[in-house]
Image (cartoon, rainbow, N blue to C red; front, side, top):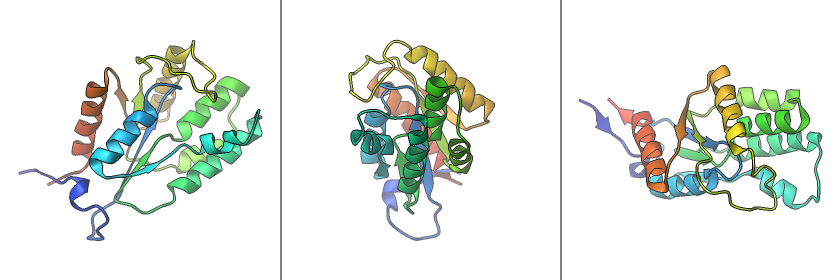
Length: 185
């Protein structure tokens, strides 16, 4: 018989249970932050925000080498021990961003991608309305970018689930996957 164990029931305890790490990925304005915050609240996980927002807030423009600094800064933010880490972003975002904007991916970003160790990635489909943000650059080609994410994750044999539809459906998809991930026999 299988028994479901929800992280909320052992949040913060050191009882031999393993820690879980999940992340949200996908094109700009595809609901990553909204969903990550909702999941963190519901599952009592530690929400880790997107370092790029902090980094770029200090700059009026950026160059490709800034993406390496963003990758390293993001990695540092994930360097915590917690029963459930919920990352607003992960290295696929930097791989796609760099390849799309600069037509190459640095060795630093490649290495950071190889070192990330998420249990599952949630690829957010851009089937929700675009929301303006001064840091966003691609309102017209989100579907094209989504296809790049999907192909990249498959080619790199990443465990991922596509999240799509309205807010209720998106939350249901994530909840179902988290229950499967955290099921104890």
